[in-house]
Image (cartoon, rainbow, N blue to C red; front, side, top):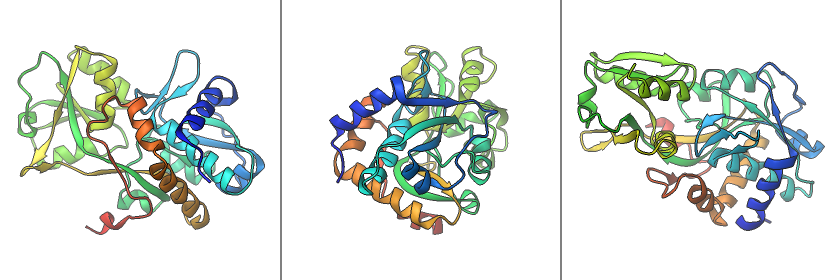
Length: 291
């Protein structure tokens, strides 16, 4: 039975203030017994981003907030409730884009929700629950820069993205004249954009809208299209240990319940303002990988 959004949001708030442990990057502690076994045992380690406003952000008081944080918390609590277990204590682990597969494979995290786009290459290394949302690649530029309004305007410009992510290379494949700059985090890209060291940064519209909202008046989001269609489709999933089909099915059941009971809509509203560029996904449907 799924909890209501009001009850869940109260649970998240309480956990964020009291029951959450933030695991340092050098800490390799994890139960190592798999997601379901660790939920039953009462303690799980979940991965997310720490530097993405509206999605996964570490706040000044040490708590975490954002859509992915809410989704991951809902999933493990729903699995616990569906099996008659107590809600587990959650330890959070920062999971930069370039480290996600390694952290899952090493058993350092039980599950990752961290703007984790599902693609064929990643699916060879990890299982994915989801997708739980669909978004599209976009650009973040300085508010006063009127030279970049379309994808083609990037030709000859300095474009930033994050090591281990795919958006910048996707643009490079289309526009040979783009000069790529890679940083470890999106917040580093944002600061480089603010300082004028790059001309634009690119990643999913969800992420860019979060940064634009955090620094209102400094940046704006530019939609990217090719032949009148969104430049890319980014299906966000939950990363799990490769081959753990039982856990993957349980995650998909939880994500489906999250959509059905209105929790997902509430999370989007709470974290992403109007939720521009966000469409609910269909958990368990990975047919887009074959397209």
